[in-house]
Amino acid sequence: MPSRVVHIAFLGFGAVNQALHALLARRREALVREHGVGCIVTGVASRRLGWRARSAGLDPLAPAGDECADVREWLVASAPDVVFEAVPLDPHAGQPALDYLRAALEHGAHAVSANKGPVVHGYRELSELAAARGTGYRFESAVMDGAPVFSLARECLPLAGLTAVRGVFTSTATVVLEAVERGLTIADGVAEAQRLGIAEADPSYDVDGWDTAVKLCAIGNVLLGADLRPPDVAREGIGALAGDDVVFPKTARVGPTSCDSMALATPGLRKQVTSMLHVDDFEEPPPGTCSPRTKVCEL
Image 1 (cartoon, rainbow, N blue to C red):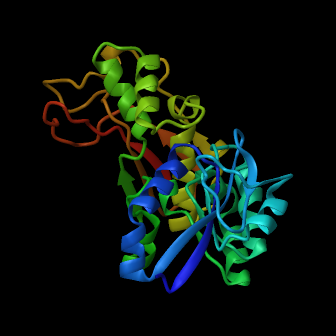
Image 2: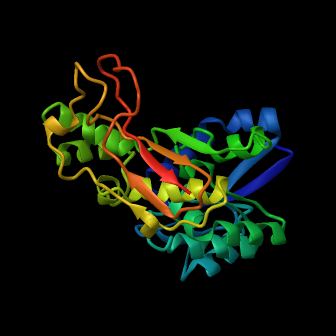
């Protein structure tokens, strides 16, 4: 028997939260055995399901709980200890996720989000609200999914003096560009990314560069003390690229590449992010792997 039962609610129930729900189900016995924690789902909300809540527990795959009118009524009815938020990205204002997370924290629940928008548009506000309410606002999976980015820098390298970040952050663009390199179309690549469950709900955010822009802003704001918004980013999308544009040259180490990466550097506090289609000084990758395209942010 668990020594503690945690009531959880899913805000958004697409690929991300469905995968989380499946993971919690698979690890149910291990959570009890290793941590003394049991989880009961008391709420689920999505455009398809509506606002469903049942304090005694419900099955989010086929919820039979009460239907609520809005997020605040839903929070009262579901009484969650933790809200897992994964609604579609809005790069321009972070809504409605920002309002949802604000409501969850005000209600007294911990908020765990996979959404980049609220990090960019409300990181400081939500963090301060969580601290005032004695709860937590966590958003590690908003960038690079399960790979640690924010916690690595803040928890493991607190005195390192972070000055730059570089990495391949946009999985969908990678899949799309590799598809084009194989002679397929942008639409074929988007379809493959959607099949893999990694594309944004609106895949144009990936293709047109908004996903990368929001990630740059999120990392800059959280880790480098900036105050960036997506309009500060000079974007260059991949929608117009043809196969010849993304084939890595076999005899040179410069030119367009088949992968998508980003870099941020400080100081300077110059609010401009540029997206460049070029290779940094990298060796040619092995066949079947991807080469980096750099996106530089000088803050």
